[in-house]
Amino acid sequence: MNRSRIFRRQLLTGAGALAGVGLARANFPLPYFGLGPRESAGLQDQKDADYTLHIKTSPIEIAPKRIVSATVYNGQFPGPLLRFQEGRRVTVDIYNDTDTPEQLHWHGQKGPVDVDGAAEEGTPFIPAHGKRRIAFTPNPAGLRFYHTHNRAGADLYAGQYSGQVGPVYIEPKHEPGSYDKEVFLVLKEFEPSFSRGGDMAQDFLSPPTIVKELESAGESAMKASLAKGMPHGYEVGYRSFTINGRMLGHGEPIRVKQGERVLFHVLNGSATEIRSLALPGHSFQVLALDGNPVPNPTAVPVLWVGTAERVSAVVHMNHPGVWILGDLDDDDRQHGMGIVVEYAGRTGKAQWGASAPFKWTYTHFAKPGATAPAPEETFAMTFGKDNAAEEGFNRWTINGVAYPMTSEVVSAAFHLKRDKRYRLRMRNASDDIHPIHLHRHSFELTNVAGIPTAGVMKDVVMVGGYQEIQVDFTADNPGLTLFHCHQQLHMDFGFMTLFDYV
Ligand SMILES: [Cu+2]
Image 1 (cartoon, rainbow, N blue to C red):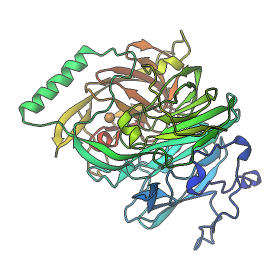
Image 2 (image 1 turned 120 degrees about the vertical axis):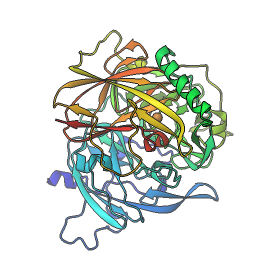
Image 3 (image 1 turned 45 degrees about the vertical axis):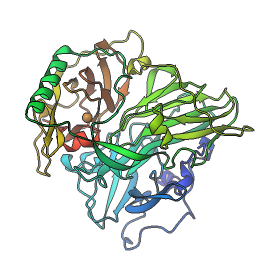
Image 4 (image 1 turned 30 degrees about the horizontal axis):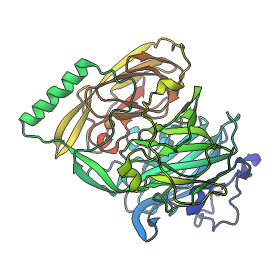
């Protein structure tokens, strides 16, 4: 226990903590002492927690004189980077300084139900103007994050539309790869509004193989809704785009030197969007997906990061200049989705250059020729869309069932036995890409749009329009387990289900 005191309160504070600052490993762990008053008034009966988070609404300056109001952690966006040690138990005090009960979800971790942070699983709410203290042992190692798990419905100030996102890095016992500095990038949009129809890229996934049967199911659902006079459901768009809370050109640049190897930890903190990221003249050596080391680290010219996904990749800085590390989408990038990378001794306006077309596939990073062990049981799931069926919003179903939009308690639809290996056969009968997330477990990709694969471990996977993806997981963490699309608008309008252990 004494050893852990050394790492107490190593929480980074200050808006500049992540903003393009190279987080050299030698700088960690940072002592927290002296950075501010302790937040333990009235809790003399308890020891101070290792970490303290305050949920509150604050002004956030995303560009000079461009100040948005957002619910955030500790008055900053992104929330403070929390560095944990694999296997070392921590206590966290979470204060909710808002008027709404809150849930804080530890995304990608194998925690118990009372800590995980999902009301559907039975995690207690952090009461409005109240507090919860939780204790857990962080695992598995790697890039994780924390975010609100409140449903927002039609309220664009609630849920992950606001600023409740912060990165977590669980230090592994052995760090893979070598690099000179480490940079965390949190991608997030602000100022959301509803629109009819969206312009999300749909054609970047490889292989493009679709399942005809799913396509005809999707198209007949579309025809049926149009025959009823239902237009397309609402989508969400954004006015401003940020990396580490600053619009392109308005944050500190990432300062590098020629020859350096920089490890980027990229987190897509969006409520709804899939993002791409390129750095002209450079490539990304992908080391980990969703924080989990990949069997076959491979260099790619572009990263595609679905909602809630993470990519850890090394860039060899061998093309001096002042560059934009940014989204391929010109409109999103010009509205802020980028950050400047500046080589030492170089000045001038940051340059962008379109990269050659590239298709993203998770199987790039799998071990060639490897096959996954057979599952003991397979669950088939078909994802369906009822256009504009829920007061103008699309209603989403899993095997024909929409999760209720009320707070009623729902019983599990899928039942697990401890230590058995399960396969989820996920069939997408809609034309949207769904970033599918399983709580409290990691899964292995075993088939991507018809291509068998093995060895890539994730907790979110993008399922392409009319495609089928299979993932396997071991039931190793008893308790109610939420499964949902991480696109907030999909999750809130039915796209959830529960597993339990029997
Ligand atoms: Cu979805």
